[in-house]
Length: 502
Image 1 (cartoon, rainbow, N blue to C red):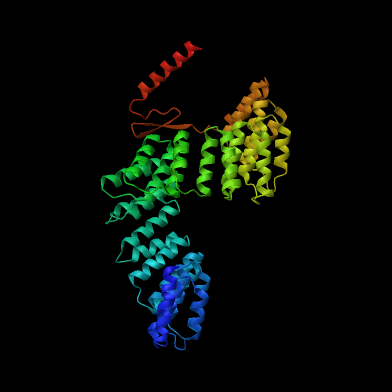
Image 2 (cartoon, rainbow, N blue to C red):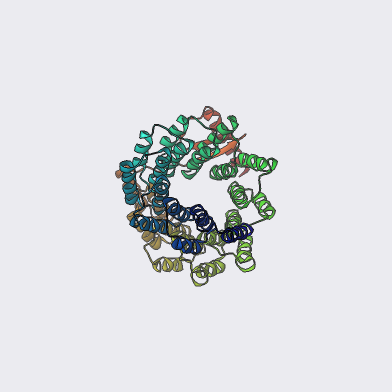
């Protein structure tokens, strides 16, 4: 605000001195106004100027682009063309960025063709259109343009790596990353690490972070958030604690992003006490922070504390919850068997906060009711859903039917699940087990026969463990680990000891 007032004072001073009609003053004035977000005033001043060159038009166009108003930028561009003003490189960079913001591939290609035909396709223009193709989701055209570029900057390489990583082409992204001649830019490392995290490849993300450390690339806040997310995926508490220590000794500010990531990491690694400590240490908290804290308490079974934090968030602090917040609260109610509170929170989603429940909220609510033996109410809730229930909802009901040995409703839920995914062997196995528990051996044999005839195999389970900062993964019948024989021997000894205790 101080700079804005100072700018207007300078503008008034220039006007008093009689320089207001100067073309350079006009350009500077419009540029100043759009940079300050004063677009109405800028358009008014722009409209009063008799002679408007391309620099003046560019000030208005790029001002709208930088403020995230691409439609306005395109409108001004069309007005410029109607006045017979030819666009220059700066104009077309603005148009490429506007098309990227709008995800308008067709219009972006039209501008690309114009530039190739009418202008010198400079490096800056190439980078802008490369960014446009990536944002519009056409990786093929982005790759083709990248391949034709004789000169590339850090921006060029990073944009292409972002494109590959954004759409899940991690092998291509990593290949390009490894070919990148200048790896001193932390942004490029963050893109690659973040790509791995987004694809749930936490182990690869942390391995790349170790490479980054070996090359003495200084990580920033984004790096820390990505690595903490990777630790959350893997349950790698030891590495997460090391990152927290790194944040402290390097005096990185415990802002909302870092603090929320730390809370999430500690919660998913099972150390809820540290999550609470970080929450209280944070100087500023937003709705995402409160949501993470509620989820942390819910995940670790502290249902009443999660509910009290939810009430503090919405009633005392005055923050608006979102669908993720409600999922955390409903999970807390499910873990604590708090049916009355769960009903109330579920109803508040629509009545008070106008948030329509999603499938995951219905699934959680069905699970809460089902675990408490309220199977008919759970089925009625599924029937009331505005859209067809998915596998997570029917799966929750099916599991509850197994627990409470409601064969009739369990068969109905299993049939729905098999209609959604006929090749899911796990459903057949669960159905057979339900029949066995009910001493319905003939039906269990029928289900087992169906599994055999259809050649279905249960997907092997997978688990991971962190030892001395290293992550080890194991699957069922896995013999790949170098010490697998010793591991099995140890497990057998533990099993024998547990048997003696029983």
